[in-house]
Amino acid sequence: MASIFTRIINGEIPCYRVAENDRYIAFLDVRPLKAGHTLVVPKKEVDYIFDMDDEALSGMIIFAGKVARAMKEVIECNRIGVAVIGLEVPHAHIHLIPISREGDMLFTNPRVSLSPEENERLAKEIGAHVKL
Image (cartoon, rainbow, N blue to C red; front, side):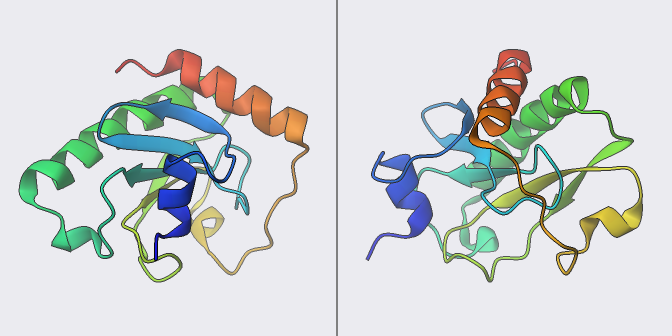
């Protein structure tokens, strides 16, 4: 059965798309730790990030870097934190989270709630700054 991320990639489930190329997609997390919390996902479904071949893994990191730089231009923060947990969805993905302190990366923190309009605005603004 296809993962929820594959269903997003296939257009079966809507998302707030930030950037995309033929191999990767970035979209806003539906349960963000911070406004702009973005997921970077390979379009080829692989459960565990380190099961990806070297070319796909390095390509995903490069793609994530481009998205992170765009996020930093749009969102006021000290850094874009990077996390790979790999247990939530059986499809490799990288979390990009705007942070101002280490504690902002705790997945036990309360999630923020954003309106659809705010998510749409963030996705468009970040996407406009991504240099693929």
